[in-house]
Image 1 (cartoon, rainbow, N blue to C red):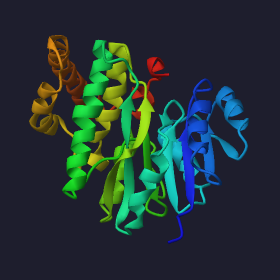
Image 2 (image 1 turned 135 degrees about the vertical axis):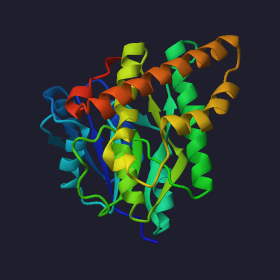
Image 3 (image 1 turned 90 degrees about the vertical axis):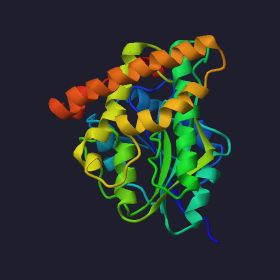
Image 4 (image 1 turned 180 degrees about the vertical axis):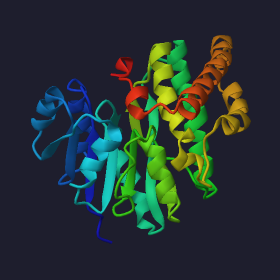
Length: 293
């Protein structure tokens, strides 16, 4: 079987210090693959342009969905891989991510985020709880049961032609893309071996800002009106509580787990107020999270 042609899109903003690591991890396993870096700032563009074979696109700085729309007009591959400039993929990530596309019913494939944050701090522990006991287990179960799942925006791939344009007010563009593909009857698969390493927020302000933006996307009409569901306050409470309580390895982590329950309640209340009641746009809700860089 002839392998599919692949385009890799890296979105970045003021990530000159991390874009090189992201590109090098991809180049090590993607000989001849088209790589596009989309960014609005000179520093990141200059850093990315030093790598041979990498095309730099300058976006207008209107958010990640707008940057991805610009890239979608330029890609030539039959599969498009999307990732960020402040993360880096594991050594076998691309092969694992592409393998499920041998099935023509596969429309998108999600990678697996791995937290690089220290587990011995409260915010770092929260990131491990989220990625291990939360997203990883839920995506694994849904994939095994052939149920709909949402891709991780840190690393995912889609079949070309299924998405022409992403709504530019989308707070969680990965969730919007997943729903739009799922609604066309295609399966969303999970590739746990497609690891992507992520530094998560280490201040509560940054954590709350990031989570309100990403989880808030599920309250927007394109997702809220969909029959496909994976994430909501009710679903989180019903399916995630016991998994979270079983995750701690000591008393300190158990206490941090209880504190996170309160933090998640705070998050969902803010989402209800800012997204559903005030209907704040992406430009207001999106704030750069410095502690993830």
